[in-house]
Length: 468
Image (cartoon, rainbow, N blue to C red):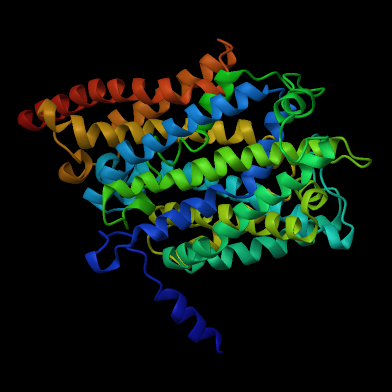
């Protein structure tokens, strides 16, 4: 096939970059169950389940805290993000442009795209830890920062290229891939965990599960060099692990394809199969690996020890299913920041950034901190969207102010974003408040701050217009 023909087909891939999704393109709930299931029964689960064990979570904290946090996450998707998505049917970035103006959205989208690229990069790295096993490539450990071999670099670039290609193909391809991958990946997690139970001395009837789990898995004692987590860490991290998607409204870009707002509850497929069962399963696998003759922190070797070749393939596909929709979101963000480029071109650029980030294993090993940070950076804009949609009209203020007044930078929104990021950084660095607990209060405070600043901003603009 000629290069010109390939480019022409890529240019024809249309994802409603600037317009509302039309009724004939709306998707059924099975696509969302598959998409959420595959994205969240995924590579991050191998890493996060491991890190909860390393941070000394107790067995009671893991099971109860995870249950509460996941319920809160599902409610955030279903009650906050989905209703706006199906009413507006615009992607996050074009919706935000109507509120904030193109200049502010440009800066926001660059930050947003980089955050998504780094998250997708972590998942490329997770997949690479399994791809490299047959070639005896040295795997990164918890404390590694830089690439540790040429083989690691080559593996990362191969995996990154495949993931970028799938993301370029668009939402329908992501949904199809997710529906096929999700059930199989979940089965790998469960089977690998069951296979690891006997290695930990747990009886087949599970009669001593709680005793062994307390003594060998979730012991309440962190490994050397890791801080100690409590049930509150589990609850809040589980809730805000995807804060950028629900509180930050990034999943307006996915849920705009939903026929009904209740499809937001499809996120439960990801939360309870992934952020509950899969985290528990990977914790069991990791504990078994630590008790082996050759312990490792890397997801690939952990899964291979638990389930052999199937475990390795599971890690590879699991990394892809998280990275694909994440990279798709990054491409949409960059496309709004560079509207003269076709979406496939900016997604390709995002893929290159993602692959470069994946070279650094520290991105994976600090995943708990990173997902909390990127959610924290993006949630103030989600609060602005919520306030503009539900509360601004009730205060007799102008909705979509930037679009209606031709403003390129909404200072009320811009100041809210900047002030809240500075406020959160101050609480973390100076006040000593851990990053896991900041996203929720920042979201609520952002709503009130934006409403107050917006009232002043619109009133001052009205006075200036009347004078002129």
